Image (tube, helix red, strand yellow):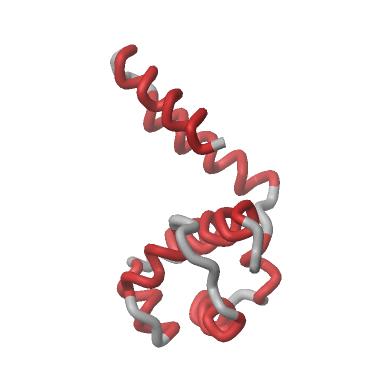
Length: 106
C-alpha cells in the first residue's frame, strides 16, 4: 500500500497538471474514462490510484506516468504563491484557523 505522503503528493500533482491544462475534474474524467468523483478523491489524497488509473490519467494529461509522482521546485513555489495570495487580506481570526488546519495536517 502506498504511503500517505506519496498519495497526497500524487493528488497535488494531478490537480496542478489538470488546472494547468484548464481541465475541470469532469473533463479530465471524461478524457481518462473515469468517474469525476474519483478524480476529486485522488486529488485530495483520500485514495491511492491504481496502476491502470495512473496510466489513464497520464494519457489524458499527455505526460509520462512518472511525472505524476513528484513536484518540481517551481511547482512547489507556485503552490506556495497560491496559498499566500489566498491568505492575503484575510482577518486574523481566519488566518489563525488556517494555521490550525495546516498544523493538524502534519
